[in-house]
Image 1 (cartoon, rainbow, N blue to C red):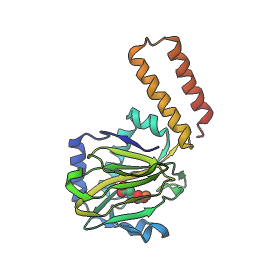
Image 2: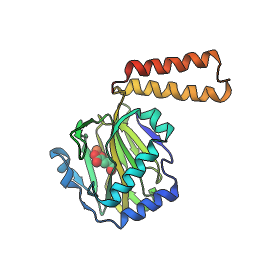
Image 3: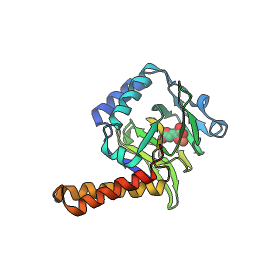
Length: 227
Ligand SMILES: O=C(O)CCC(=O)C(=O)O
Ligand SMILES: [Fe+2]
């Protein structure tokens, strides 16, 4: 399931982030690529412990922790500390698949990548190209979002970033280990949760059907969650 979350950051905050990032010192993205990605990757990244990256990464995590749509869609167990990349002057990231298991920085803990995320920090009209193209069972989907919006997609998908031919595309990217590993099960829980939230707008809180559906949601999550 491919999911777009609008306004993870409001436009003004995204602009502040972009300005702070533009002024930071970037390094070749190949330095952090695995052997497959290295051959197809031409972009720039900030070092994980760069002070700007560390500060903005913490702010993004705290926003996500309060974002009902993100929590419901991702059911996050662990989140990789957000990283930042920039593509310009024809920079791109060819077709690849993300590593399945990652070691969390400064820790011996691992993270299984269930979901990959890109949070766009530059507006679509600031650059040409730069679409994140994700292969899905229904064909390739090209994603290019407003600054502050984020896409979540299964880490099992092949994906690429098309060359940025003018301007610069700056984003944050990271991975999520979900409490519910199976994409289809997670998608059904998301649909159920959204329907329950919708019914809550029009039904009394103690409506018997609403209580039953809420119980079904939690009991399915209890059955499928694997912390
Ligand atoms: O820049 C993006 O949107 C995606 C980056 C990516 O695919 C990766 O770093 O593995
Ligand atoms: Fe990737």
